[in-house]
Amino acid sequence: MRKDNSIELLRTDVDIPDVVQKRADQAFDKILKNKVPISEDMKDAFQSNKQIKSFSRFPKKRIAIIIAAAILALSTITVAAAYLHWSRSFSEGMRVTEKQKVQMEESKMTEFLSQSYTDQGVTITAIQSITDNYYTQIAFKVEGYQLEEGLQPWIEEHNITIGGEGGVEAPFRTMGMFYDGLMLSPENGKAVYTDGTPVDIDENGMLVSRYAAEDGSLEYRLLLKNGHERGYFINKPIHVELKNLGSISKAEFANQIAGTWSFDWELTGSEDAKEYTLDVPLGDSGATVIKAELSPISFRAWYEFPRQTIIQHGKDDNGEMLLDENGNEVIFEIPVQPPELTGVKMKDGTWLPFVSTETPSTGYESEDSDICYYTAPTSRVIDVEQIDSLLFRKVNPAFAEFTTDSGPVNEDPASEDNFYIVPIK
Image 1: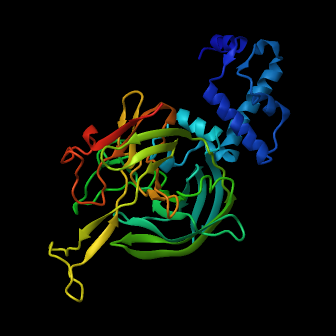
Image 2 (image 1 turned 135 degrees about the vertical axis):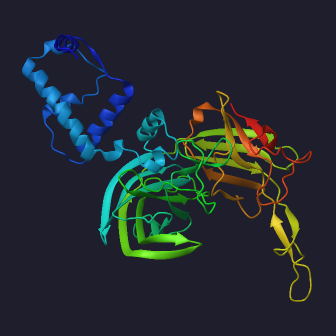
C-alpha cells in the first residue's frame, strides 16, 4: 500500500466485520479471564464498537500506541485464546463453516481448552469440546508419538467421570477413536476424505487413513452420549484419564507406550435446539413421529410405536439351520425398531440423507410406554434453521432384506424412494 493511501485510510472510518469484531471481543474476554496483564491502551484497542471513528481526532502518539497495543493483543491471543484454532477433527471432520464456528462459540456449545499432560515423552493436550443436550465430543492433540505407517493408533483405556467427586460413569456411554481424516459422506453414506475426495485403497484392499497432521501430531476424539437425560453433560465437572498408547490390528492392541494422561475441567455446553411437535405416520411401518429436537450436532425423534417383535431363524456361516443341543431349531426374537432419523433435506434443496447414522441411542420412555425415541450425533455441523424436511430411512439395517411397503427399496441408497420425508415448519 502507498504511503499516501495509508494516511488517507487513517483519516476515514474503519469498518470492522461482525465476525472479526465478535472474535476480538471473545479474545479480550478470554485474556481477562486468564488474568493476562494488559494496558489501558490494549483495552481501548479491543472496545466493542463496530467502528473506530476518525483516527485524525487522536494525537499521532495515541494512534501509534493503540495500533501497537492491537498488534500486541493479537500476539497475546495466540497464547491466551488458543480457542481461535479449532480442532482439526472438528473443523475438517465436521465441515464447520466460519459462521457456524462463531455461532457455536457464542452459544457456549463449544469450549476451547489448553490443558496438557506429559508422560513417557508424549504430551496429550485437551484442546476443545462440543456439548449439547445429549452428547459431548472432546478432542485431544497427541504429540511426541511416532506412528508407524500402515498402523492404526489406539489408546487402550479411557476412564471418564462426570459430576466431580462421587460422580459416576453411568448412565452415559463412551467411545474413543483417533481422527483418521475420513468421514461418511452425508450425501451417499460412503467413506470419503474430509475434503470430499474419494479414499485411496492400499494393496490389501484397506482404506488409506490420514492420521497425522502436517506437524506430525495426532488427534484423539472421545464421544460421550446420554440419550435419556436431557442436558446431562452441561456445566458439570469432568475427569478424563487416558491409559497406554499404541496400535491395534485385528482387534488386538499392541502397547508401545505405557503411560497415563489425566485431565480435569468443567464442561460448558448449550441447550440450543429447534423443537417441533408433529403427528406424521411413517407409511405402513406402524410408527408415527410425534416430536423432533434438532441441534447442530445431534438429532432426536420421538415416535408412537407399539412394541412388536419378529422371529428370525438362526443360521450358521453356510446358511444352514442352527440347532441347539437338543436338536431344536434356534430361534431369535428381535424387537422391531421404528424407521431411523438419518438425514435432512435443506431449504436450498441440498439432500443429506446420511447425517446421523452412527452410534444411535434408542429405547422406550418406560416399560409400559408406547413412546420410543431415537437419538444420534450428526457427522457434520448442521444449520438447523435451514432444515426443510426430516428423512427417516425405510430400511432397518438390522435386517438383511431391504424391503418397503410396496416392494424392494431403490438400489441407490440415497434415493428418495428409500426415505419417509417429513416436512417441518
